[in-house]
Length: 110
Image (tube, rainbow, N blue to C red; front, side, top):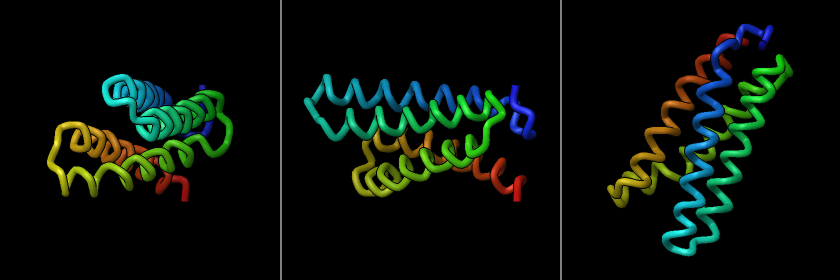
């Protein structure tokens, strides 16, 4: 268990990682989009690594999960605003949740 005051944050990070990686794979399967699979799996790996580091009590777990949320939000929020399609909107919601969750936790470490 994490001893750095971040208990419980590994689960949301693992879930966000699984959702983004699965979404990237589904995007590739449906459209053949290589950027979808690379981005989805890449962000999913960042979330997973962050979750593992949080769970193990290692440094930079919160920061990695926050970085994953920033990358996801940076790519999905502008598309959600512009296109108003379900997938970018859903990704924006996930990113916003991550930004709030991990941003709050990071703020508490300052």
